[in-house]
Image 1 (tube, one colour):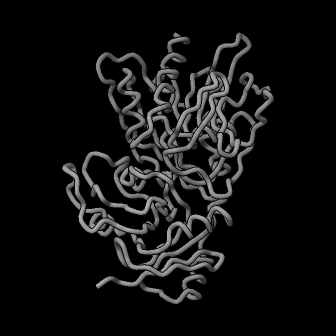
Image 2 (spheres, rainbow, N blue to C red):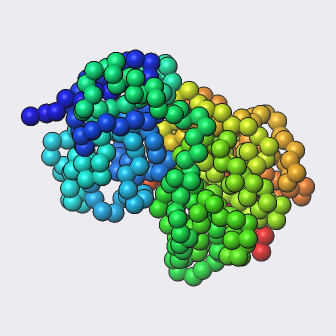
Image 3 (tube, rainbow, N blue to C red):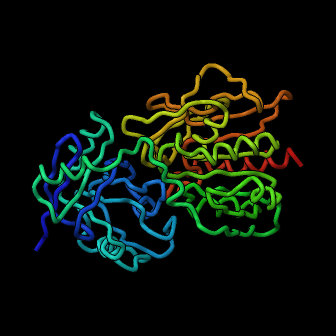
Length: 373
């Protein structure tokens, strides 16, 4: 027999459904993702730390869970919301069901609710605090607990998801370059994409010092995606300023784009409901090419799209913009000689489970390092 579950948003809207995954109570920021596939990669993306994720696709769990597609060592979402979970998984790679995986890792979820109505509510009102419970089924009582939770604005979460110990992902084939990747919530596919291009990747904790980075003698610096408010990431921002002064080639994605913006003296702000999914259109302003991208972010860089900005390190400009809402999707830093010194994008070029329109950005990083040697 199905166990009742309740979802309550901080503005008082509630949804009654049935338990999916573990039982208990959980709290976080309610967001939605539009991907029709790749739920395993979504669940294990550290950028979703402390978020209750709603899948807009109605049927979830059809292909079960396998042992190859995780993007980190665990499920990071705070809670999970689906409409129609698969009763039986069907895929030759599956080793267990999604329901069993959620239960095994203690992830509280809810199913059988109108996820379309929930998504429309979040689009109109914005991402907000929420709670899911199989223990507290009175909306007023659960709402009181939701309102006790801290907001996402001001949350320093990169320090909660970063690796504790440095590790190395060796280059595949002949080693061409050495890169330090600062782990702000890195996905496993990211160093793999660099490794495929002959890069030896030294993944360091978010707390790494300038001395620890330079001790690796890197040809380039990379900063990853990650959760939380970029205004709280003072150490990575200071570190990046020091590395830009050292004239180190830099590539950042997602949170790394926001840190890059702050290092250049730009601001960041919270989006109303964010960009999450694998179908986000982005314009490359230099080429006019439109890329369909994978995204997962609730904050963005505040920069003038039609103007350049002079910084202590060179001239900064917006390189990519969202075609949905004109949000900054990339930054570029050039020197007095016109050469690119550093760049970043707000989306995920490693894109597991796809799309792969933006994989060329890793090649661009290789070219940037080649130009400095």
